Image (cartoon, rainbow, N blue to C red; front, side, top):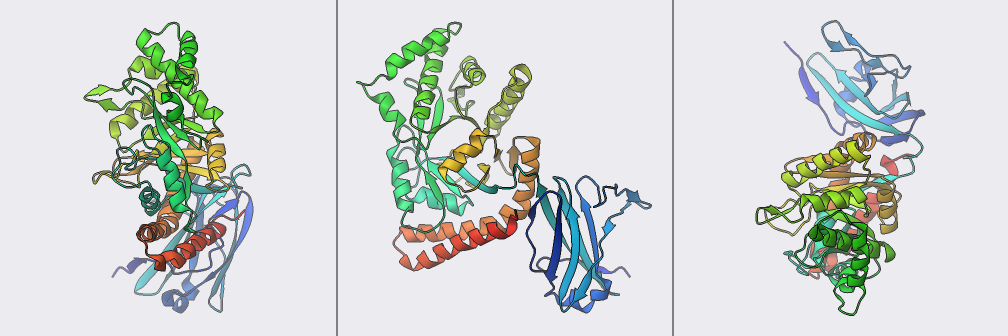
Length: 438
């Protein structure tokens, strides 16, 4: 008769963290609240392997006869309900530990994963957010005050309301969140469009003033600056030359106002045609007069085409721009709010840290349709996949989700939820302090 196999969760407590510096010797002193493990402590086995098949001494753990994996056995002790062992975690890898115990009827096990980072990434935490959303300030379904709460409910640490042509709604969103001690960072922003047919869209994030107001001011110098910049595109037809010049005039103004510019959804369609011609998009991308490139938008064709163009430009001209994931959220019933976002590696989710992480390519774009799919450098995508499974989904997102629900109630005038909102902020801070161990 085969033994019953049970995979447990929560059988052990007091984990020392899950992200460590490379070449760290970690001492585990795990509490064992699970009765099965206590009753069968003499049978406990601890096995270790890292994601390149290596054991702690660097040797390869080949498959043993019968195609069974040969893991490294880890010596340990169990005293007074405490399971103790030590491991040296070498190199920048994901590490796996399996702890099991058995008797004549059953075998129970629980698995743990850890990650070790080189010194350049170790000072940074991981935060995620959506910086492209719309409110009733333009064509969204929810008020500027409510949008950040919905974004918190989706699991985000930072967000921005980026209404079409309008900067003021983002400031309203920032003001609405200030009374609540939530920890959510809300940035000022807007979605800026060129004059005319709206060929290209740009996210202005963190700027000190409205770019759209400056562009639309009849007494301003936008038009004059565009005419000067048109000389930079002598080989383009007049249509593309005008809109390319407008694009670079706007991104220059965003930078002048202390903001970060994102070229968003280059391959979106209006009435079955691309809003911007391929010639225009190609010219903008090759010149690279913007800070980051958006990928995602809960839209497979947009993501597929942008990814294809990105790969083409890398091959042809060594194109290099940080990628941003965002949902272009409008609050529509069919639109998921938690599947397109950006992960940054920073010391906090404040705008200055966000901008520094993006400009220095310490970011990963996550986009998809039914499943989250990260884009970026191999190293950061690999680390992000670990965090998505072991940090965000398991620990981080449930706390954000609850706090977002409470923020929506607080916006309706329910002051009884304020202490819990503050408590959840403290819980998130404690989670970061225990999960990431510099």
